[in-house]
Amino acid sequence: MRHSFFFCLWAALLLAGVASPALAFDIEAHRGGRGLFPENTLQAFAASLLWRVDTLELDVGVTRDGVLVVSHERRLHPDLARDAAGNYVAPPGPLLIELPLADVQSYDVSQIRPGSDYAKQFPEQQAPSGTNPSVRRIPTLKEVIDLVRRAGNDHVRLNIETKLDPAFPAEAPDPQRFVTLLLDLIDAEQFSGRVMIQSFDWRTLQLVQQRAPAIPTVYLTIQHGKAPNVSLTQATRWTAGFDPADHGGSLPRTIHAAGGKVWSPYFADITPELIGEAHALGLSVVVWTVNKPEDMARLIDGGVDGIISDRPDLLRSVAMQKGLVKLRGMLHLHSSEPKPPAK
Image (cartoon, rainbow, N blue to C red; front, side, top):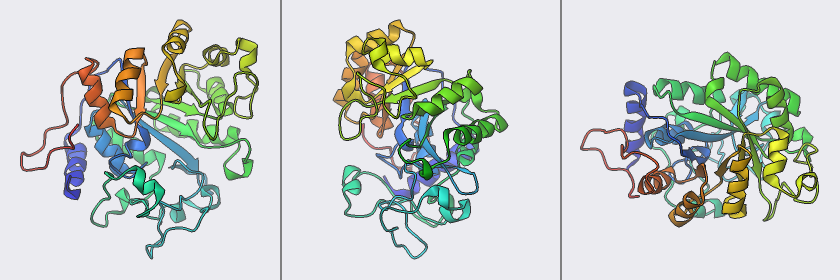
């Protein structure tokens, strides 16, 4: 795919708009679809809209001057952020909460550091050509909402993750302030009907449920690997005092008791039996982060309600093969433009 393709897509979005029907199965573009475009950038979000995703999954942090910005890390990422001289920031990178918005947006995050382990994960990711700063910088959450509005898409939602860790309270606003900033923006933009709020830190989800009960809350979990946030035998710093041991060692029952609407587990932690248990409690199950078509197909067959993926193009293809979405394709552009990547 040539770099010019994105700018044609961008123009088509802004000028023509994209319509998409409501679908039962939720196709979510992880960090905007970082398998193909720089993560959590307007470029990625615009392209994923044209893949007709249902949900743009994204992460938010807060700057020193209280602006919500779209970033997976609480810091500028050393493998993503370059200064005006083209130098990547030194590890571990400055905290967003210590920088004003103007400084945060002075960095270019449109290309992974060449040769890094991170770059090796996404060899097909395309960096933009040209110097348009809007596709190269960290966007604000408001800019993403504005993009969705300009696209004319009244179907797509945002799945917004609050990025804070109870073990590092100085690295982000406290949960009360974080949730206040987020809900105030969503309310000011009159966008509450088109968002979900997710987090590994269930404290923020509890506050959302108290203050904005109509907004669905998504309880993120990972049980295995280097950084599990839940245990089946005890409460952890992440779970806002909720202990699965009090609910028969069941995460679905714990999340139901906490008032959640959606359970979002790491895909390797889920089984058809757990999906069935969650459904019986009225919970939707949206798994993360699934990039291999065979895993997508297996999870769909197992009954998940949605999948978060770095490759929404592949996910949409598998969902079509399973009969979950209509064969509508991307927005048609001029025939001289290159075709999207092979599915």
